[in-house]
Length: 89
Image 1 (tube, rainbow, N blue to C red):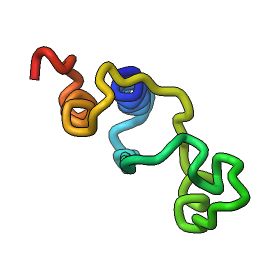
Image 2: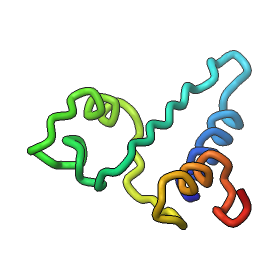
Image 3: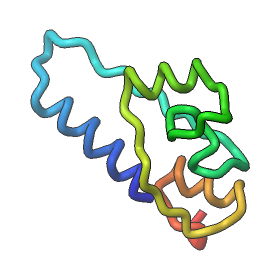
Image 4: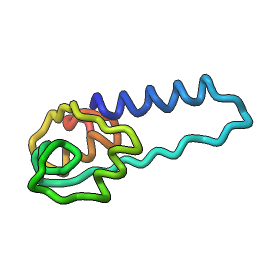
């Protein structure tokens, strides 16, 4: 939920302070499944070789704190995509 709020806030700020002549921002949200937060090279794990994700993380924005109200994948994704709690999907 906080990730969605943060992304929306960033989008609103960029729209509010940008002029009409500027290009709209490109936002790509990459979601991966069934891994711990340290299961990527960009998160400090030297045993994992993930050069493409590492490059994206280095050149973009990486959110390292998040919260999920549900432990299973489908309701968590639905909450992330809709901004609603699992009890309101």
